[in-house]
Structure formats: C-alpha cells, structure tokens
Image 1 (cartoon, one colour):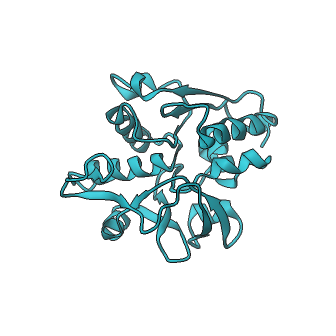
Image 2 (cartoon, rainbow, N blue to C red):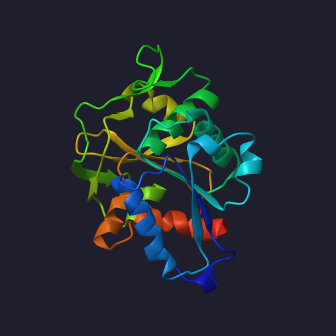
Length: 242
C-alpha cells in the first residue's frame, strides 16, 4: 500500500472509550503507525463514545472509515449503535473488534431483523440476548481461528488458520447464527469447535467483525492482514470487491 495508489487520504474514526492501559488500544495505535510509514497521508482520531451525540451522518462525515474498538461496555452505547448503523447503511468501511463485534451484531439484529436484541452483560434479564457468555472465557487467551473459504476474511487472511488473541467473555448466541446469515451477516471465521469468531456483511464495500483482537499483532511489529485490508478500504473503497 502506498500513497500513490490511494484515491484519497484515509481519515479513520476510532470509536470507543480510549484507555492507554488497554492492550488492544495500544495495538490499534501501533497498527496504524506502522501502516502510516508507507502512507503518510493517513490519519485517525479517537472519538470517545460520550461525544457521539446528534446525527451520525453529520458527526462522522469527515471520516473515510470507522473502527469500533474493544473495551466495552461503552459509556454511550446508543451513540455507538448509531455510528454502526451509519457505516452499514452508507457503505463506509467498517471494522468492529471484540466489543465492536458484539455491538455491531446487536445493531444488525435490532435494525435489520427487527428484534429487541440485547447484550447479556448489560441486560442480563432481557428475553432476546444475541450476545451471551462464551462457553469458556477468552480473557487474555489465544486460540486458533479458521477463515471460512470464499469469504473476504479468508481472502485477506491468506492462510487456512492462525492463532489470535482475545480479551472477552461474551460472543454471538448460536441461536441467531442462521437468522443473521439469512439476512446477509455471514460467518467468516470459526474456532476449533465451530464457534463464530468473525462475521462479514454481504454487499457492503467493507464490513468486518472479529471477536478476536487482530490489532494485538502490531505489538510484535506486524500489521494483521484484516487491519491492513480495512485501512486499504479506507484509502480506496472502490478497490474492495463486495
């Protein structure tokens, strides 16, 4: 990726409640710093969820891509849901990792499937929980991930499997996998047991969700191919096939 190949400078919104002690947040900054070495025109800004007020199309119009980052619950989840919907409906390249994965699933279940979807962590008594506790905690754990052949994740990943790092206790309720798939939000990576570890939205220029944290790889000096693909989409969305 080089600046000569990009159609416009990338300006990425990092939506979440930034904390310099969070490993994933350190990894996000490092990932983007490494990528900027090859394209000095790219930029990014951390946007605390408390600032996500008003109409997302006005507040986020300056950005060429949106990344909803780990470390939830967020101070302002409604603002996050609004930003996710904006990216989904307008075709803005979007990446949701860990908490971003969870909130994007809820947004889709609410606004596409029409469900009163909730997160078990923040609404433990809700009747429709699309995000529920994992069978085993993945806080500071690593595990194998296998991209689903034919998906964008598989194309970007470039290998049949890989080890990924996590920091989460919650994931997609398997009861909703088929309904999401039927509505276009499809499974694009699984773990050894077949549990969902990544999703992508069919027909969108770039809309990827990972329960794992690909940004962590940059702390070892390497940019994860999914992060690289996201930034490439931010630079030139037309270069990414739907």
